[in-house]
Amino acid sequence: MLLEQMPALAPAVARLRATLGEGDPAASLREFAVAAIRCFGRSLPLIAGLLAEASLREGFREMLAGTGGGPHIPVAVLGRHLAEEQRLGRFPAGTKPDAAAALLLGACFQRAVVVSLVGGLTDLGSDEDAAADLVAAVLGSAGPRDPAPRSRL
Image (cartoon, rainbow, N blue to C red; front, side, top):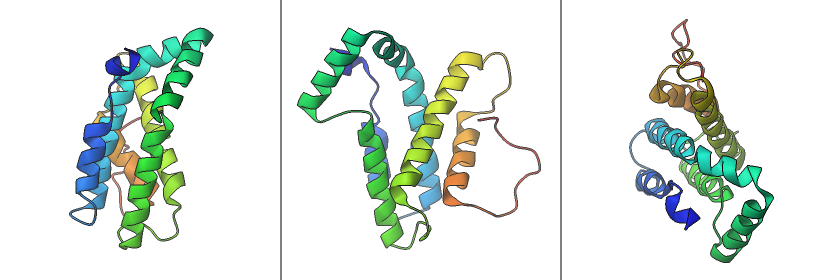
């Protein structure tokens, strides 16, 4: 029942996989990052409940063990995607794909938490601008940037 209520990243993963070797990899990652931010934002109440209640958390772990799923799966999937893009010469050669995946999705989760906690109190910029900034950081973009940040991640 709980998994049915959790928003999944599966549609975003499918769209990302469809772009392998085609189009602009940064644009594909930005779209994926926006989807991740929004998915994590919708998941926060469920995550908070699981983290707050040991018996729920243990039951959830048991259920995940039976399904092979879990919050580590999107990181692994994104890491494999980035490794393949790297093999094709479309992702920086000196970057570790699994680490880049963990950094990007971790930052997306942090963005969702911050927006949930203080979104109405300050201008955090759009999810799209935050995703663009996060992807640029992961890709190591060193090109000229606007002097003012677009988002406050």
